[in-house]
Image (cartoon, rainbow, N blue to C red):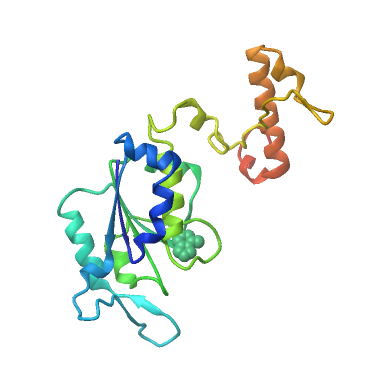
Length: 229
Ligand code: ADE
């Protein structure tokens, strides 16, 4: 998969991609991330990309021209499955969106800043608008990192044990069951007997029951349309 990211602050995104699973995915050649500095597409002497908003009001708006020049340049080199704009008024990211993005070959992500981008950019180029939650960040960069992490770990071959992504919370609209490791007893607190039994079918049933119980208790909204409610 190739992910192109248009941003004014590529340095904000260095560390998530240079450690752990995201780095390993890139080292294995399973994902390529390319940053594009929006200022490089500015046509004015100051390299500025923002301007006052029509109608007045606080906050600058990123203008159409540099974004359009950058997107047109990238689109002339490949077809994108999705052109995504990171914005608090987008669709809230969930596992379903991450799953479907993980099947794409080319994704382009535009990170906003200041008051956002001129609406006409959104109307003309954007196929998917994503929010990572009902709060406002200083820009789209950290949100784009969250999307990339959620997506890249799902690409086959990225995780060593592929089944581990399938047993994540939310994969069946259920939270994951509790997990334990050694010691089997700590300060009088014991690991549930069934997990020490070696009986695979019983363990599977216990985990499923725990998932349902946990979801009913912590996130009943996830079970709204399901058989467990
Ligand atoms: N940009 C600013 N806030 C954001 C959010 N919550 N999600 C995605 N992009 C954003």
